Length: 148
Ligand code: RB5
Image (cartoon, rainbow, N blue to C red; front, top):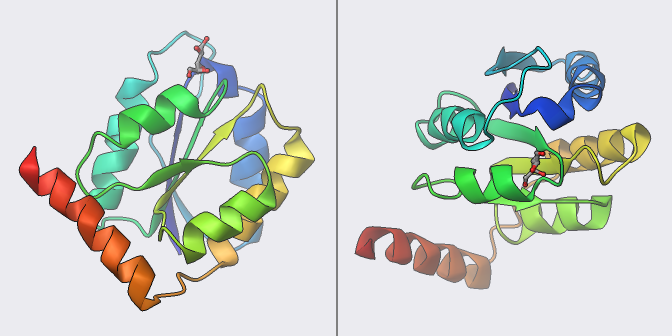
């Protein structure tokens, strides 16, 4: 599984933890950066990861900022992206099953490292449930994009 990861400066400590987990899970990682502690505006990595996901260059994206909120909002501006902020595994499971989310956003200032790992594991191991009602709703999301 190929994963693009991106973050802002708030993710400094959590990002290596998540990258280690992804490696343990056998994922190929595309690091869209940054790796230093220099402040970076979250829309920049969000767009990079969002475009890779929307262009099917990777299977999923993982984005980390302070809350997960700003970076998910930015990623969701890219057509084809369905980014979800998750702060516990149940939301991570349901957003895969129901929304076929293709980007997981995490708040490094919101969740502990261990909880973040559980969230990532759950997100990446849960399949979309592909039911008729979910397909219909995702098609409606796509219609909104086309009307922009
Ligand atoms: C950066 O200080 C912080 O605003 C950012 O990481 C994120 O939490 C925004 O949503």
